[in-house]
Length: 245
Image (cartoon, rainbow, N blue to C red):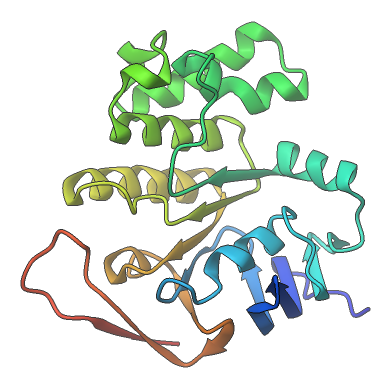
């Protein structure tokens, strides 16, 4: 194995993975610099989710290497990878992944509580981020009583409250309307920059990709130089945008 560059917090080499015989990744290599906002862009089915799952330790690639801060993630056992995800990584999915029995603040505080942080400190951190995301008054509500956009804000608050080194966000605003997308992304990217959090965004939306410091384009599980991305789904009269890297 070759150790990654010192300035890359995440480094991957020659990742291959298939799903039930269907190719997901075909030799993808990339590095993510510390504190960088990186967009992994491509149309649906291009391998973005598989790549983010491999980079975050949720999935072990069938071939290739993944390193976090010069530590090989691909050789870790399930327990160590789970600990890494809990302690150092945040995850935001396209659909809110909330525990229905827990309140808003409990969902946002969950990673901290699982780490063993005190109930009081975990609640304080969670509520602070819920307030920044304009859902502080909903702290005691259950997820089923909230709007989709409010539930997704809880997912963002949960990722930020844990003070991770890296947040992986897989199409985090795909299910939201344009105005809600813009507000959520502004909060997420501003928070990442101000707190020195590395942010890896998977997206098929040209407007989202444009917010990143750098764009890596995928097509059919491989890195490509350019990729055509559509405009936001509810934005009329806009043509596809070609991104070059």
